[in-house]
Length: 344
Ligand SMILES: [Zn+2]
Ligand SMILES: [Zn+2]
Image (cartoon, rainbow, N blue to C red; front, side):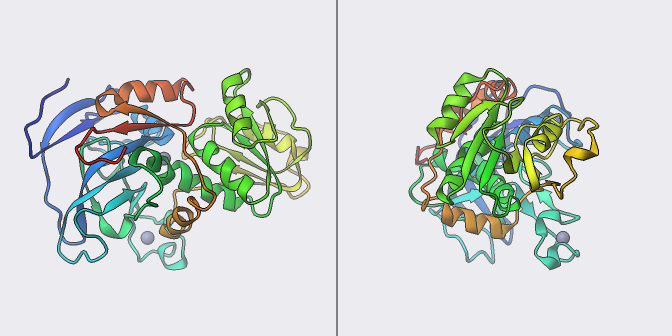
């Protein structure tokens, strides 16, 4: 259902209060930013696998209609009271972490990504599959000027979560990356910049993804069932496939780490203790901190990370999601609003 919206109303796509339903484009009154908030005219919004997990009902439904999208790039249109960090006309990015309590034991120990009461953009909070968005200024970020709106969008989740996952790999020199999509294509560039050797693992037979990985500096690319030329010091798993955990452990050297970077994964099959033995570790990565965002957004233009994006009009969000579900996106899918003034 598509409605033509008159000026001054927000167009947004809404999952209609329940998983498994097609998105709808609806009109809604444009809000007014309250104290601490900014009203953003959305120029671009990345499409992330987490959006699929929400829409497909693989994550708990939040109990209200969802406006997905947590890689939001736009322009500040209005600021609420007490906002001094942004002014109208500035470009801004809004990531997944939308609010934290500041009081719990996680918030108070530099781990706000684990906040017990955290609220997330495009899930509990309205997201960027829209032409306007109201966000908390404290969880919004300036973006490097080198990137257009669509190119900057994947930095905000694929880049940030990828960066946090890479940090979990410690000093690993021989890095395996499983699932060569939006996050992997950014992480591979950062890893090469840091002097690591990258081995890319894709769905069996996905020659296009393997060629893409080699083009980004991977030393080797193969099927996820194959062994790399040498054992890994760390493996980053971006594909939501639990069976990859024992597969990655089998090709990881003693003392190495398998990092599960997705918010959802199918069950991990039982495996013999022998492939974990030798101080191998399995860890997960959850969300991001604002410190991650500041660090990565400063690092990206130095690498320089180049994002490979495929753009879709906002109205074609379902098509973009379907192609992501089927593995038919190379790099990152990004919705563009066509809003006047967007930097594309
Ligand atoms: Zn907290
Ligand atoms: Zn995401």
